Amino acid sequence: MKMNRRQVLILLPAAAIAWESLMAGTPEEAPNYKLSDHWWSMLIDVSKCIGCGNCVRACSQENKVPEGHFRTWVERYHVDDEHMTEPQVISPNGGFDGFPAATDDSGKYFFVPKLCNHCADSPCTQVCPVGATFVTPDGVVMVDRTYCLGCAYCVQACPYGCRYIHPELEVADKCDLCYHRITKGLTTACCENCPTAARQLADLKNPKDPIHAFLRTHNVQVLKPQMATGAKVFYNDLDGSVH
Amino acid sequence: MNSFKNAGHLLRFAGLFVIAFVLFLVIRHYYVPKSFGQYGHYRGDAIKDDAARPTFYAGHDTCETCHADIATKKSGGPHAHVNCEACHGPQAIHALADDPTAHIPVKPDSATLCIKCHAASLAKPKKFPQVNEDHSMGMPCITCHTNPHSPAIDTTGTGGKK
Image 1 (cartoon, chains in turn cyan, brown):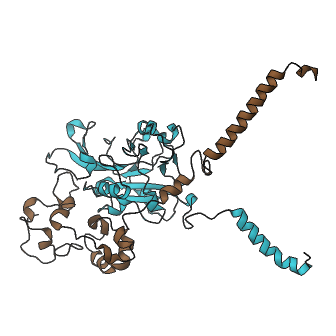
Image 2 (cartoon, helix red, strand yellow; image 1 turned 30 degrees about the horizontal axis):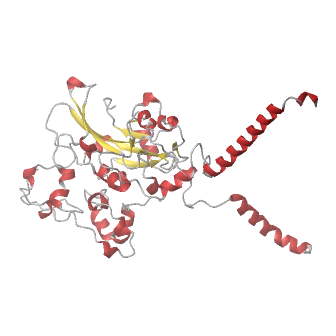
Image 3 (tube, helix red, strand yellow; image 1 turned 45 degrees about the horizontal axis):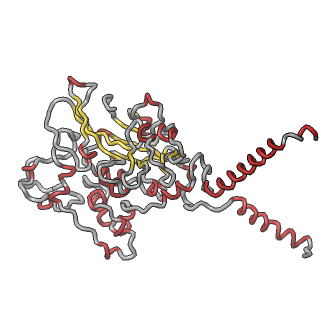
């Protein structure tokens, strides 16, 4: 094939575009979602939680959580003057059916919703012998069900007790921050269904996320900071007795 | 090459070693998923697998595309920040259907629904509205709080005991 100079000049830009798209590889499955643009976390306002259990029920339905196991659950603390460091903690059926009315007038009560803390330096992912659990580039701790052997090392390693072995699938299971929802622009099932907005999904990499202002202006704590897990579930107004 | 004259047994062993290594590479090629190691020591496609799960809660934005009137009713009332599915349950089957009328959601029963949040308990935050059992005198909440989307009663009626 013979080409004159003009034809070559016309073809060059076209060839450049073709080459560029070839080098870029296959486009991502979800073109509007980029892993590197997010760093997910959650904000929990303890003073707003009423212990209704809506989050537990919603999570259970959205994620088909087997009965008696929980990806999120709610604990009720009762701290009285005599037992400041040994609070009474109850969580009947994980708070799925709510809580019985509190009648003891002494001391203080509060509810603490719990879930996977999606630690940046997660102990559970470090112990997995087969690479079945990992932190995604957008900060979600996830389990690969096709790789998990069900050895339960991770269940023991989690300092927050957030993992369980799925009784039917016999693999480790846990909160994945409703990954199928947050990648579609929805919030998690628990946040969507919290009637008092006590739980809020937050994206630490999004400069417009209200969490940045909140963290600057409130007394926010993570659970077990002494474990240096890099927990990303932030609690506002957390009492010192919570463990 | 005299030094290799009596090294036959070593060469045979080395050959076996090479064959085993090639065999290992071939087996590895077929058994290790392509996406393993894409982001780290795990199967990169596991992220896509998880993201592909179906949703059951449609999200209030989806609800409000059709039910904007309810959203307006809610706004300004005490239930302004209570999302639709918190009371109505998971409605993706209704909201994402080609024909939403084929999956009409069941109306929640106010006799059992409201107390899930509003039953009085010392454990709840003091400012959160709570009622005892004798507040309604056995009537369903909706008898007086006729609009559950904005349930505050404006008129100064006889009312119940808080």
